[in-house]
Image 1 (tube, rainbow, N blue to C red):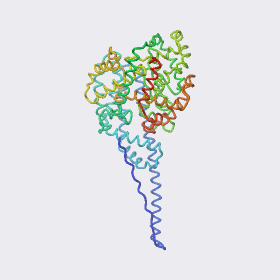
Image 2 (cartoon, helix red, strand yellow):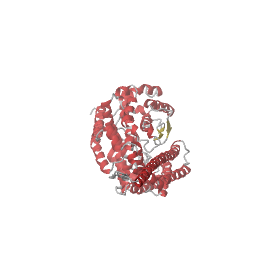
Image 3 (cartoon, rainbow, N blue to C red):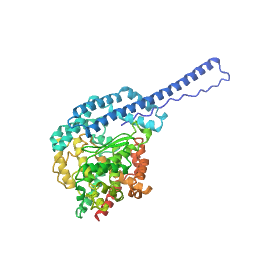
Image 4 (cartoon, rainbow, N blue to C red):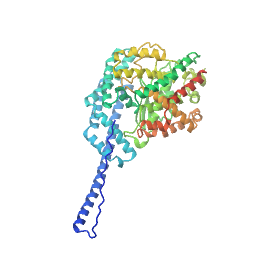
Length: 543
């Protein structure tokens, strides 16, 4: 979004006098001028202090409204009874509408304009707060309040309907909501940036600076390197992963989740864990986070890596500096960087042999019968098995980007109008066959598997693949700076977390996404990611 240009502050001209003797009237004028100048300086200082107090109050109100909405979402997605969405949707729409009204009020614009005019008098943190809030204000004020409230109500209802549709393999139930969500996203894209193609405007919301012109060649580079690897591995013998699908009681998995959180350094006094259909993370502040998971008693790896993935999100938000809390700069700066952290812990660390060797003895304590005949090496190969599959969240590292490409292609066409919502299942199934070579048996394991569209998010999915690529490059730099695998092999992730906190976490939204990427990755190069995948899976499969 365009920002206000910095305003020039008028400078007082110096007096130049040639008189040797100053008449009394001149002394009087000069004295009055000095008093007026001094008084004006005090008033400006007082006005600026008052404005900063209002800025703080505005941001704390934003935090309060956001916390209320997040709490309603958390309740609705975890412990609320199934048929209670109507009242919750009403509450969400009213709260969201009230905040929209407050934030887009003329006095907010006046406050941000004043602080923009005085930006040179602000420190880096305050200046960045004003820049980001001004960006939000300029964007949000273009969205009519009634449309904003209607969208919030729609997505709250849609999420509950999506759950029922997924459980019943009933795309028709969800279709009317998807149609409305697509229409809202098209309209909102025009509010976000009317000069951009609609899908570009949506992509930019999740990873600032990206567009189809960025993602198209990015995905093409991944496809060019990954598809031949998948074909080559298809000719190799697959590792045995049958032991992952023995009976793993949910209660034992819950205890194991607690252990994994301990290994990750997630303090249970500050991080809660719940259960939901589709795992997610909510961070209220850097001392209050909630992760969620879903337990399948015939799939140990599903929840294990869900907990590590969501724990990575929590590590990011909880690593943001204290002085940024309750401000616009708290939390991660972009979804690409957020996903880089979740997938860093999940895949680069969690699926590594040193990590598995470190945690396996305790795993056997939680599941003594199920893992009695399993070694760490067998477990490592099993959780890194690369094979085209149906479910994105359970896909291996190698095939995962292809799952994202399917969603990217569908979103592009939904937003540009070349694909109707009713045709999503057929297009989804065709692309899964084309990209991954698998047949989709039903919509539950097809286009209804993710919650993102029900939540109104279009343009989010590509950040998963981008985050994976960021993470691979971060690991390369981390290995150059510190001993990564020695401590990880002892179950100590503290050095990994310290490096990420220094390079990524602590900044929150203080820097632009591109600057954080540069800080942690250097010059971004997708070839580092594809090279990492080729090396890892080449060794695993003897290619």
